[in-house]
Image (tube, rainbow, N blue to C red; front, side, top):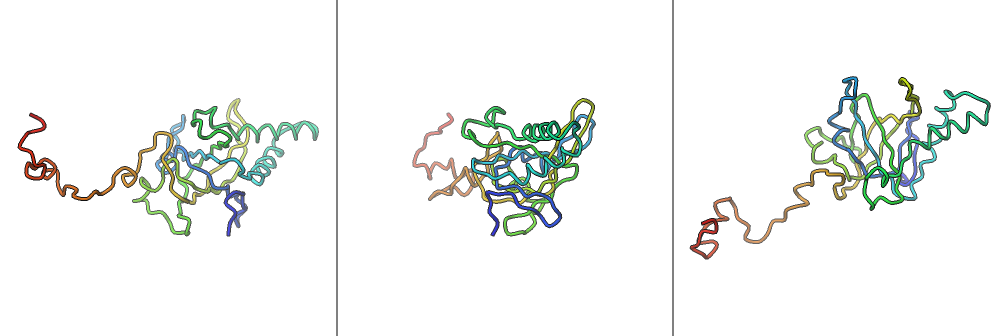
Amino acid sequence: MADLKKCAVAPNGDIITPEGRMSFADDCHKGKKNEKGEMRYPLSMLFPPGSDLKLLKKKMFDVAMTKVSGDDAEKTAKAKKYVEDKFLDPVEKNAGAEFEGWTLLRLTAAKKPGFIFANGKDVSSDDYDTEIYSGRWARVSSDPFWFDVKTNKGVAVGLQNVQLLRHDDPIGGAKPRASDQFEAGEGAADSPDDMFDDSASGSDEDPFA
């Protein structure tokens, strides 16, 4: 059984992250156009304290080492800095005080990632809006790459696929699930008209008079 607190290596060499909570999950399945008008599928992941991200950092470091210049010490320092810059403090990025000590990582994909449940079953596109939301726990497969656009360059983390794990409270303004808001009570009205039926309320007064 996989250790959900550690990275793992997929058969094709992609790095599978530890479990974390998704943020900006709508953009991940609906897509969002960048400044060039190209569709991208970004996702932010929030990893709790104790998450082991060493395998992912090592692969990012290896990517950076092939691109930076200088002697060995200079290259190592530059590559480490590029990697460190990608692992952010979520509180500083307005994620909320409850994420103190967590780690924020932003990933992106040029093609819509695949989504599966913990049991390996594919998530139907009909269920995306209810199953994929900010706050849910997930693991993602990733493939770091180097980018160099104008004056902006560094290591990016490519998003490949997403495995949805357990439910949790929505975060970041995510729409709450209906099942989290309503409970069926005894004597619940069967229709809107029943709610204002005088005989059911035991009163002849019109509450809106």
